[in-house]
Amino acid sequence: MAALRAAKDAPSRLFVAIDANADGLREASAKAMRRDGAPNALFVRAAVEALPPELAGLADRVTVTLPWGSLLRAVALPDVGLLAHVRGLLQPGGRLDVVYAIDPDRDAAALQALGLDVARCGPQEATCAGYADAGLRVDCVSELAREEIAALGTTWARKLAATPSARRAWRTEATAV
Image (cartoon, rainbow, N blue to C red; front, side, top):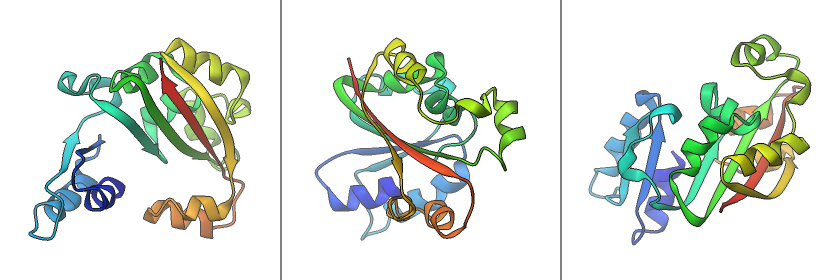
């Protein structure tokens, strides 16, 4: 898990990993508690719709890597209400770094079920407006090459980078205003 690696690399900083799926958090949490682990890493099971109010405004950086479900909808559409929950974690001036990937051909039915318009799956002018409505200024949007996806370091990212498909990935960097 990226938060665990980051916590080990910067032991004087606090890292909080949030995921709606507890399965991935269990293993990382157990590793963090080992003697050679990362006591500066905390793990919270929560959906984007129900983030703990105790975390409001505490983060100077939030990273969202290859989300699915409602978090994908929040960052890709964007869904302003959900994205505002993510923004709520950040201090003013805090940074949001989002990487998401979509295969419009393969994922069309799932995307439509999420309420995503398949034709709008890449960054659009409306993306910047939606981020602004959620309290975020978009600083940079870029499409990622396969090697950049692999460099994210997650198992899913390496699989995406190694598998030929129509899947495209974008990075959106924003600042909380």
